[in-house]
Structure formats: C-alpha cells, structure tokens
Length: 204
Figure (tube, rainbow, N blue to C red):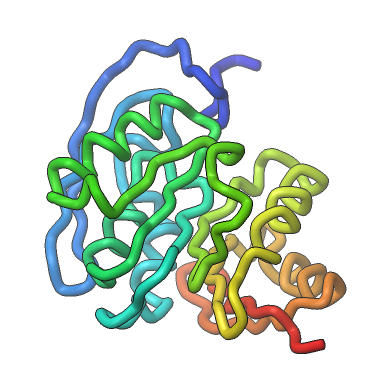
C-alpha cells in the first residue's frame, strides 16, 4: 500500500494534530484529531449526514449506546451530549483513535460516560439501546458483513441501529443484505449521495 490506512491497529504515520469543529444537537463541538485516524482533518461527509439526518437519542435515554468504528469520536461525543444519562461505548481497532476519544471525552466533561475500547474489551453481557456507525466499507464486503453480524445482534429489544453508507459504495445493496440476514432495514433518509439506514431486529 502506498500509505497506511486508518484501520491499522497502531498507525506509524507522523502524529500531526488537528482541531475539527462542527455543530450537532444545537451545540458546537471542538474535537482533537490526528493523522493516522479516519477523516482526521475534517468531519467526514458521511458522518455529517448521519448526524444531521438521523434523530439523536432522547435526553431521557439510558443504558448503553455504541459508536461502531468511532475514529476520534465525533459520533460518541454527540451521543453523550444528547443522552447525558447513557453510557457510550466508542470502539475501534486503531489505538491512536481510542486515545483521541479519551482525550476528547475528558475535554467535554464526559470521561465517565464515554468508554473507548477495542472490540474485544466490550463485555459480552452489554446490550445496546442504539448503535450508530459510519461503517468502514473499504475493509471489504466479507469483513464488513462479519463486523455488522458481530454487533447488530447485540441490539436490545426495541433497539435501533443507524448506519450511513454512500450510495455509490453499496448503500442499497447493504440494505438488501441486512434484510436477508433477518433484520428490518429501511432507508430512513437519502442526502448528498449517502443512504441513512434504520436497522432493527425483526421479531421472531
């Protein structure tokens, strides 16, 4: 590969820091990012669409929420702000990203409510009220499917997953595949070339 990708476990690229500023849930967020993590120089367009089009958690939401493939933590930060009574698990395979999530959580005063973790560090007993993800499509279809089949079944009864996928990277085919796996998947919104999918467990 010509360059190291953001899903490396331990990026070796030079650690250049950057501040990413964006607005969501009626407030401004200023998060620290760094080279070697996904979309480190700006809020990724897909993440921006997800945060603007999917309804944020209700302020009364409790329990555990999941930011799947968190990067430096923009989704986790927004979820923690929207649902101050919930615990947000922010998971990634990139250790630099997890360090940034912890730094940003502390700066937001949410270090006790945002848990940055490697996938295997999340207790198997934890189920999720909501799962939010701008999934890493470029890891390849088999790996992506395995990732989703690992985490989507951990939705609690009545829980919802919100996924954003570019149409030209297979947003519609992913929706069909989710249906074939027994999930209720609907296109909730379509904006700027992205599909926002609402995914729930189908009742038996």
